Length: 461
Image (cartoon, rainbow, N blue to C red; front, side, top):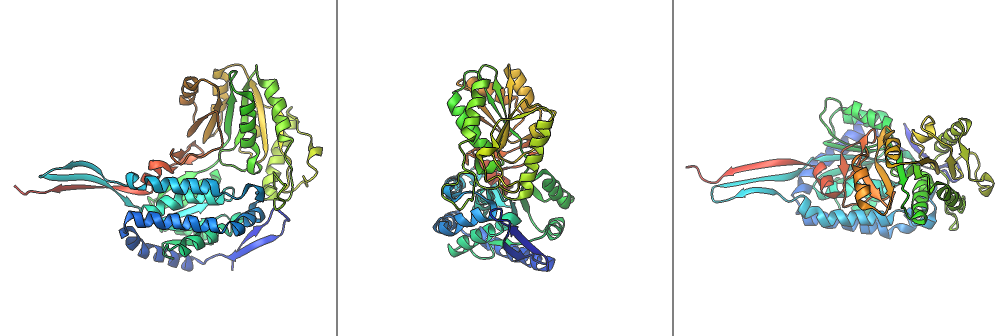
């Protein structure tokens, strides 16, 4: 029997483990979901919406359990209270737009014809969720999928093994039928076999680029609808008219919060030469104020990375960059908790360039590189010099200038004077190797449903 195991970054010990389902047992889960889907879709939309909101509310009631579990599983300090703010914002927003997003597009409603386009649920939706924001990333698809009339099967990353259990527990206790929303533990082989068999009508995956490629290979020839949010190397650009203090505060938080393990975290920053020295000085001071330590300590502001192998990648990228001429400016002596394993001190690098993996490959840790630029054109060329495209953060007082630059950035979202935020009213999407499809907003509902046209002639003459 294959066991799915979570090794806690807090102490390096096994925190939780569950047996993986056999292929036959997994097929039974899918069969139950498919059987339940039609009845679930026949329920009034408002009933489905309210049940999802009750599920979200029930999860909020479990905060005393959920928050420390997150710290044990992936290292986020309990000081930050879990993911409830974003989780609730997203759940509430998609609930507020569900009726409009799913309403028919009426072309004609006359004495002679009724012509309209309706949105119909795909059927069974498979959500493969990541560990870095395990509740928020899952709810991006789970909430609108259920509201739209799909049934949902959730598979969580092994690092956040208990999150799927808690989500399903909350929703079922709130009244969502057990076969409508199910949690599963699967190994890679069984996951691929289910997708290759066309078991699902829609698969949403958030994770690595290689993971996304594996999903696409498994789905080849099945015509299964896919949503993929993969890697990122999100840039920030600080222009000469930027609010310096605000830029430092937001970009450094975006680079290091959650130990830098954010899909849209800031990983590289380009600063106009007139502000460069001041920006670097203030950024180093900002980052140096973190307290690295045990995430269960209420005073800790920076916990361990989710696994020591993730921290190893960050250390290797930093070492490679330094060997090629970069300078690391944050004094490691400020962070005695850095143990060479999962506990990793934050770092700011200068004298970096795009020949370094640190500035081109996803780092996904609490380290950021800062480069000096002379113009918008130079910054734009550097921002686009990446295989990824999720978000870009522009810092200026000129919204027209930001919009003009933004049109030429190869990215899914353009921010001005903010960063590392997912607005549920906007489509969350990426380009290039960051993936395809989109979640949240009206478009998120459209991706989780299919159009169905009705052309009804009311007279025969």
